[in-house]
Length: 166
Image (tube, rainbow, N blue to C red; front, side):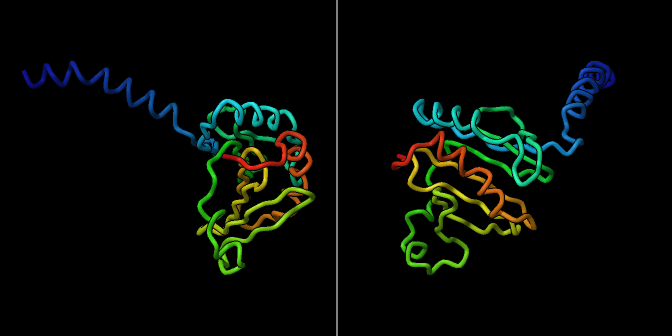
């Protein structure tokens, strides 16, 4: 009886393991969590997806998985844009507004206001402020973030109106 069970489970288990191995991302593909905004913000994000440049900081567009109008990426390692994210807690932290948080700084680039947050791995996460949708851009450690924000500012200004995101 025991050997019968092993014979019965053997081939299906082998098929399952082969399928899982075939789905692994050994090619260096990067994933990004896809936000789930309301319909109004999703429409703004779709407009942003059409407006973002094909190159950022000289790097070609290479979108993360899963494919979505709410995410975009450039280079390797990826610079990742996510549109329709929730407001970061540090955006309402009084220490940040007063300049008392060394890992979170408010500022603007070419007419777009950003909250900059240094991540534990040395990367920087930027989130738009004073726009009708929150747009988050993560720049890997070691990359110049100013040119990334300069390249993305025209698209953000075109697609995401000034205002307060809810």
